[in-house]
Length: 414
Ligand code: GLV
Ligand code: MN
Ligand code: MN
Image 1 (tube, rainbow, N blue to C red):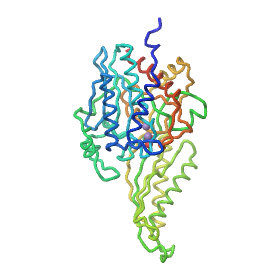
Image 2 (image 1 turned 180 degrees about the vertical axis):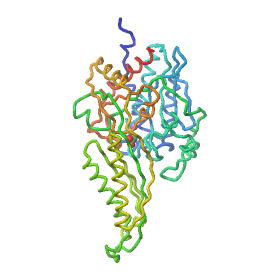
Image 3 (image 1 turned 120 degrees about the vertical axis):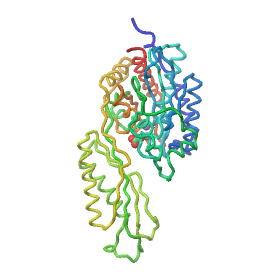
Image 4 (image 1 turned 45 degrees about the vertical axis):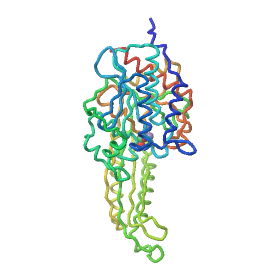
């Protein structure tokens, strides 16, 4: 006998309407979204999603780090089957990164409501504070605190790129909630996300069954040099922090090329001081992002990177201070959950492929404490963290339906 719930499907147009409505908040000229974590734009986005959660009859809690969880009760009162993601964005974000996972979760709640489905387990849809890490490091901050991996006070005292703390910004936007953190366990966690890379599109596959997330290493460097006149200072007499920043940028690029795929290396931020055309820079602050799926390879890339910094200090006479902004070991998702994604995709008639995630995600923080998996859908031209980010409506529908069925499978069974 086929269970009636296996016939349920999401409403693609309703989901896309919510994605488009949310993208108007913090919308950029020419497309794209800027809702950096804990800004006024983030607050307005949060308010909109909370309104939708309440309209769907979910009971909404806000925890001490500002994570928002909307819950639909089940027959049992134990841990919920959870889905969700984030609604903060990078400065030049697209409408799908994170938002798709949250709004697809709301769509699942609506499908369950409309069909009057009583689930065995409670169902929760969450959005987590500061997943992006662009304004406050580390990324995945809200889920780390939620799962008790990062200390609440440490997170609250974190200063952002503008020198203000998480705590003061949470208060400013009114999302310094009362719910305790660190003890929350889910029955299972499933996150739908856009791939943000080119693989699914190139291989013409609709669904990625994500088997893990690569390791991430973020370092901030502060390089000290000596300001001097750009016209009068001979090249041999310079202590140039700008040059050192450029040399590091070139080194990590070559390092990644030498190690080969899937090693990646990015210098995403460089600030020079005094940042003037005719002054040798006396200070550079920059970030280096290294990632690999294998921990040993990532460790050896980090080792070579730090060795290069020592050589550069010696050769150029600059000072270099470093600070870790984030460090995540590679994560492997539960085989049982990966298989559920594969099975539901096949049942629904979609092509599916196992793949690792190159980006960090809230789901990876849940992986050690409950059965966890992720579902990827294709990103057109593999573009993300860019206002051009786009995913076809048919792929959103496919991902939403796989999410619905994987969640139902966990919600209705043991
Ligand atoms: C989050 O988007 C990341 O940088 O992986
Ligand atoms: Mn994301
Ligand atoms: Mn992102």
